[in-house]
Length: 506
Image (cartoon, rainbow, N blue to C red; front, side):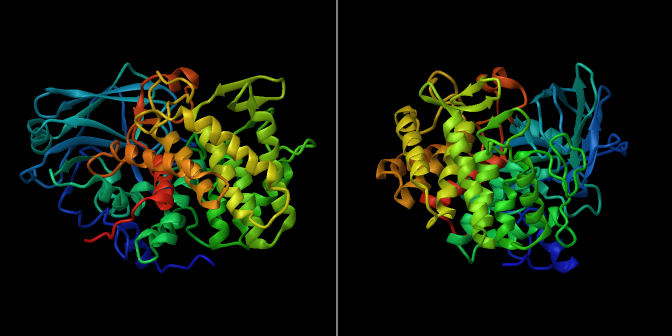
């Protein structure tokens, strides 16, 4: 089905949360409110060569305090939970601390701990009711501790109505009767769930599509369309930034960019964007059949290369692309299994890294399960089905008593990762629905779903996710965890497989 063209006025409504989308920049459900904060002073332009997603505005936080205040003076709404939130505008590759004080008095409120933050990542500082009232009345001052290049955060100046309230600096106020599982769907079905183009946004798009298929009258289709209009603002030419926040318009950065093309193939199967991805894959294919980045084969390719190729093969009636998708899954099952475990990476020199890393495991098993669904009717799927069963046999005994998987699945003493757990469970549920996996796999997925709901913030963001993998195994083995819209996309896929989808009221 082609992507519908949307008139500018309607598009502005889609961006702001109207026209069927869950509210995000207009009226907010009574149980959740966002008290917006805005920088008092104008900010300098972003660094040369960098770009903020969606053309949104950003302000810098450096060694000198930056003051943010509420544009409307009013009494703070009563609530049972409060948090100060900031969302990053540009990628950062360091460990940072942002000191937060009351603007008028200098009284410390705490520190925001940002480690290897990617663009469009939300960080929060819990507040007491008294602290939230002070922030509402007097504003906050932000200062980067330890020096270094400034950090950049999104903000919504007057007239910037397209930036969702959830992504603007704000104090989140949750009433005692807030229902996180309901609010999850409101946040997901809006631009509040937007992520950087590639594997992160692809997880969200897949979740929105799955929910739209199960609930056609819900807000998920409109949300999907609004997301795509950020990356396809005119016609079928892609506009996006790479993982370092550098413009990468209509040029793929790596194999990790591939996942959104599975969804795009359903909107614009004959479009230039899908053609760009096909050409990229064909060009990158090596003599041994692997489509990989440089000298390293990764589990990501199961979901960012094999799965989109499988979907495109069906959309374009291209048996050659179906064969290429099967080839990618076979290469990965042969090289990523070693010593009884799945590894994230296998290098040409024989090295392997990230044994049993939950999110890497999720990329392989979810890509395999989804590809099997897209390739039904194709031949030579027996070894791939057997690979999914092998993974399930390995993973099911490793599920923790709390229903999740540890960040390194074989290390039960390491903290769990909600994003990896959601991806693994979605794969198990998908495989069970296809009849490839036994009912026990579906039962394990339902236990994970129940566990993940306990990690939602009052307004439905998924917490407890391992950070984006830029800090090596040391960061992944730590107890550092973040809020993750990418993880929300994986959770949405799991909900679509085995959960209940609520009817969203106003």
